[in-house]
Image (tube, rainbow, N blue to C red):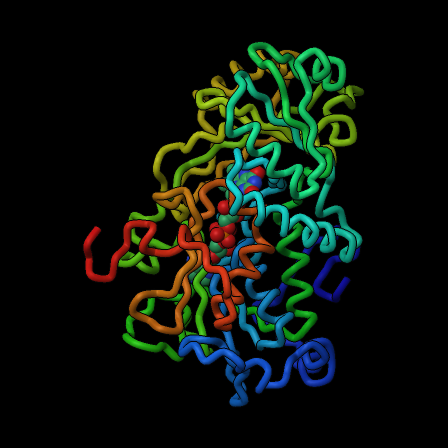
Length: 435
Ligand SMILES: Cc1cc2nc3c(=O)[nH]c(=O)nc-3n(C[C@H](O)[C@H](O)[C@H](O)COP(=O)(O)OP(=O)(O)OC[C@H]3O[C@@H](n4cnc5c(N)ncnc54)[C@H](O)[C@@H]3O)c2cc1C
């Protein structure tokens, strides 16, 4: 742990600007930095390169899961990186805030996201191992299906081909193995024993600590929309601080439309999502993560998902259907009576023993949904050294490490296999306005 971590609570605190220059000069960063000639092998005009004028090679705005892993990965590649966030890594307003996120490679046969989740899982595990803190809980993940479907079978084969442990379980066997559930209407499940829960906020705070300890600069400040044209050389915070850099990566989640109203605008829409925690009866440990997997009820109307009690916080449940459109700055972060009633009605069917239990906690967050459901990762069409990253659309967290790798390659000009679905043009943006 670094001095920024409270030894008793593990709570992470960054000073407003933490710069560990000593480590840059002689330590970790210098040790892993390629020579500037190595770092400049790409001749792409927008590629990040190692600068010698004291200005950061890259400024990453937003320390949610996408920005944090991007900053961390660029730093590992030897670039100097400044990370800026309005409220801090994993803050409560951000889409990456809160306790837990599911990691699964089950994506109904979608190769891109199955592959990215598969790429990311070992990096989450390594982070957990390195930190000595529980960041990944491998409680397993169970998906409940009502009907046979070609895409479920295809997904199964795809994951088997990738050597991902996966198992189909018929209802009778599920009843014996997972007595916490009532499997009404369900005919079979797909179980992934090596998946589980990532401790969301903690993971970002630990990554931020690593980033700063390795010489990265962290600045807490709200970056203002940019107004120049062509190539920008700096951004300004609301407090008037100017932050210079070679490249700028905006990973601002649901705030991206506010920063780039013309280009992002309604290509990303934030929706209100309520999350509930219920405390099982005293002495009942069956809903603990050591005894129960995370789960998804894969049904278009009942699309609930949840987690066993992680670190004694209670059984977590939420509806995955997109809620009402919202604003991350102003939305009221109190759950509604109707939302609670709806979740209890669902639980009376699937987890009857918990349906009348008291709430132990609630949260209101937002999804930042792209119009296509795919991530939005692309160069800004007007600012040649600006990259936009967002559109996690309710499933982005698990992919943080793979997104960090992808964006870093885009920034350094080394991306060999761009995913067309991430491009602005695939989200309805065409520079000539034909959309
Ligand atoms: C309730 C809920 C459950 C979810 N469950 C899962 C799950 O189980 N599995 C999964 O994989 N994904 C899940 N997701 C989705 C996932 O959490 C998000 O897609 C992901 O966290 C988005 O990360 P981000 O970095 O793009 O955005 P954010 O986390 O919102 O990060 C953006 C950051 O930018 C900062 N910022 C914004 N504007 C500025 C500015 N002007 N200047 C400086 N900083 C700024 C913010 O403070 C914030 O920290 C869930 C999301 C929610 C809300």
